[in-house]
Structures are given as C-alpha cells and as structure tokens.
Image (cartoon, rainbow, N blue to C red):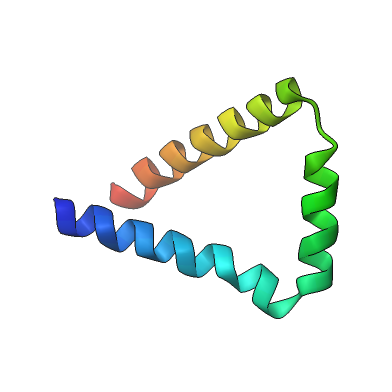
Length: 62
C-alpha cells in the first residue's frame, strides 16, 4: 500500500510540472488569478477538486 501511495504522489508531481514546463507564461497568469481569489472561493474550489478526485478514483477502480 505504501508503495502505491508513493507512486501516486510521484505522478502528482509529474502532472503538476507539465503546465509550467509547456506554458510558463500561461501558468504564471493562472497563478496570479488564483492568488486574487478569496479564502472562501479557494476552499470551495479545493472541495470540488477533492470530490472530483474521489469520484474519479472510485469510477476508475471499479
């Protein structure tokens, strides 16, 4: 189980690195836009991403 967790974390790093590598200016612009969101908006976005991740994981694992 721990090995699978480490593999998943490594894949997150790879995926997170794709955008700044391929389009650094677009990534910078997106980060600046996100920095202007309120705490409430960021929390809602985080919750939505977590829910989508859990739902997607359940769909893929079944």
